[in-house]
Every structure is written in structure tokens, then in C-alpha cells.
Length: 231
Image (cartoon, rainbow, N blue to C red; front, side, top):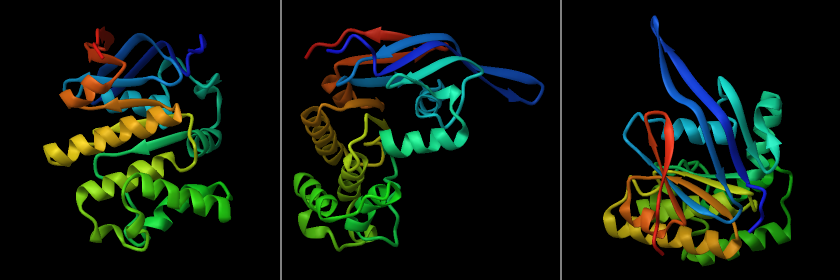
């Protein structure tokens, strides 16, 4: 495993103004995630899990400290540069799928490639291959509202991987699914991400996800604590 972390948090601090007071989310937070790791992030509601994903993706900036992803200091980029960085290097899987309802399954997968200006026979083949891998090759012309929740989330997983990102960020990807369907989506994510050698950071309450992970980090009182995992 590469000695240089893919994600590095250095002295991260984040707070928000709430009326006359300040709400501290993180204070002097340090962490590192190596390339190829599957890391689960746990914590109580309101502990800052989604905020941490936003900081790692450059959607939000810390009050102080640094976030490095792939050797890039995100706070040193302009807002436009951070947007391009997310587009090119990060894949997202959300709780509520976030598929575009007016686009077919195939068009939803092609969109990240279209935003990068890369649409051709090779890209269309990759869409077909990924849909095959998630078991939806026969639904490429369907619209999201014709799919079950589990099927929509499988499309979302394929979309997150289509542009070969450095990093996948998943925010409660099974939170809107029943237990059995959620387990299928977790197994799919684990299989596809590991086979591609990608790095996955997942916010979840799922014990099954924690059991699949290489490492489990818990946010508590603005700090990160690591729990030993047995695989």
C-alpha cells in the first residue's frame, strides 16, 4: 500500500455560527486514508459526518487546517477548481439516489462523462459493461421512476464509478432501502470498489457496512476515533 495517503486531514477545524453562538463541529482533527481502503464513518446524528464528507470533497472549506486529496490541498483551489476536481476525481453515492428523472438509466451514466467532454464508442461500451455488472443491462432505456429503490441505487453506484474516480464518497447509501436490498447494495459496492482498487469512504449506521470495511472511524465530540475491525 502506498505510504502517501490518498486523503489526509491536518489540524482540521470547522464551526458554524448559530445566532450569537458558535457551534464547533471539529477541532484540530487529524486522519489519513490510504489508497484502496474501504473506510466507514460512524457517529451520532449531528456529529458532523456529512460535513466531513463535504470538506473532503471541497464542497465546504474548513475554518482552519488542511484537506489533501491525491496530493492536492483543496483549500488552495478556487471554487471553480474545486468543482472541476470533484467532477474529475470524486464519485458520490447518496441516500436518495439523486438520479435525474428526465434521463434514462444509460443517460444518467453518460452524464458524468459528457461533463468531461468524453462521449464515444469506448465510453458507451463502459456504460454497458457497468450496467451488466450491477445487473441492470436490460434497463438502460428505462427512466428512474420505473425502477425500484434498490435498482436506482445500483444505477447510482454505477454512475459513481463510470468516470474512474480517485475516491468514492457514500452518504448513507442504504438508508432508504430495506434490510435485504441494502445488504445487496453494500455487497455490490464492496465488490466493485475493491475490484477496481478504488478508495471508499462511507457514512452509515449499518453494522453490515462496518463489518465489510477495512477501518471504522467514529466521530465523537469533534474527534475521530478508530475501532479495530476483524475481517
